[in-house]
Every structure is written in structure tokens, then in C-alpha cells.
Amino acid sequence: MGRRKKAKEIEINPIFEPLFMDNLDDPRYYQVYGGRGSGKSFTTAIAMVQLTYSPYKHKILYLRQTMTSSEDSTIADVRSAIDLMGLHDDFREVRGIITNIRTGATISFKGIRSAGSQTAKLKSLSGITTLVVEEAEEVESFEEFSKIDESIRVAGKPLKVILIYNPTSAVQSWIHKEWFKEGLPKPERHSDTIYLHSTYLDNIENLNPSVV
Image 1: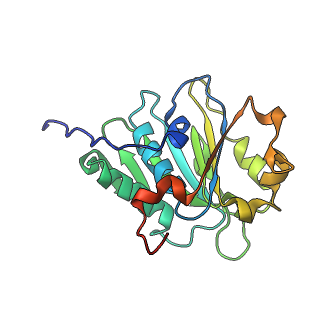
Image 2 (image 1 turned 60 degrees about the vertical axis):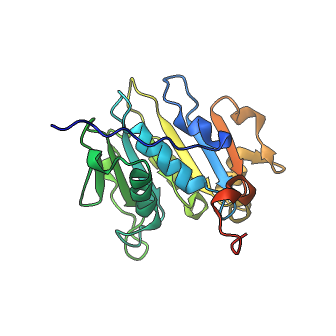
């Protein structure tokens, strides 16, 4: 086997550094919220790619209310992160599952609901250590989220539940009711939650001036 290509070093905004932690005593929940162009989704994708090199051999699941196609933006972000880091030789993608062939860790993608309003059977939750919920405000209820959350229970590995969303869209959702009070993080959630708020100003060097 040829010599492994070294990953390219990428400068990460310090706001997102907690996403790269990989310790057994890390908090379980990560609130990653901000407006368009803040870099939250792509930086999370970079963190998830890096996490596949962990000795814990993580099984990562990206979840959305509906996964409209195999070319969903969440999959595109992970593919782009792999390419940006120069690690494409370490990964194989088969049937929507991206596997790090060096470690055996995986990144998969599912929709909570399939065609129409039918709830999909999420059998693949078995063994999941890291859950990334994109557009989390679209998940219909806290009860629906809790059923999935309670399935993330692998022993002996760090467990993460990462919620990514636009705060203006989530202000009337279950997310705001469970994790915020009068617009501020709930104190009782501080021990098990990290709040990562970003705006386009935190990612401005990567944005076209016309977008700004």
C-alpha cells in the first residue's frame, strides 16, 4: 500500500472548535446556530470527516426531516470537506454511506420521513455515536427528536448530538422551548450543552462580496 497522503491543514474559526473534541466527558448536545453564510454546516462537515480518524471508530449519521435526493447539500458538504482536506484516497462511498477505509468509521445520511408523511424506519441508528441534525428546526416535535436522541446510547464512546439551524426559523420551535429562555441559553442546560452561535461575519473571508 502506498504512503498515506497527509491531510491539508485548514484554519478553523475558534467558535467551532468544540465540534472537534473527542473525549468521553464531552457534553452531549451542540447547538450550532446562525444565519446563511456563517459557515456552520461546512465547518461541521470538516469536523465530522476528522472525527472518522478517531480511535473510537465513530458511526456518524446526518439526519434531516426529509432527504430529498442522494445529492442533498449535506452529502455535498461532506464530499467537499474530504476533497478540501486532500483525503479522498481514504474514503469510499457506496449507496450513500461514506466509509473511512483507514479506520472503518462511517458517515451516513437519512431522512426522518420518507415520501409523503410516512415516518422512515431508522434501523441504522444502532451503533450511532454522533448524530448531526441539519435544518433541525424542521423536525416536527421534541417527542420525535427524543425518540431518535434516546437511540444514541453506545457505551464506552463519546456521544454527540449536533443540531444545526437558523435561529430566526427556530424561534417558535421545540428547540427554542427546550434550550432557550427569553432568547438566552437555559442555565439548566449548560452542563450538557455547548452553544455555538455564528453569523456571516465569522465567515466573511470565504464569501463573495456580492453575497455579503
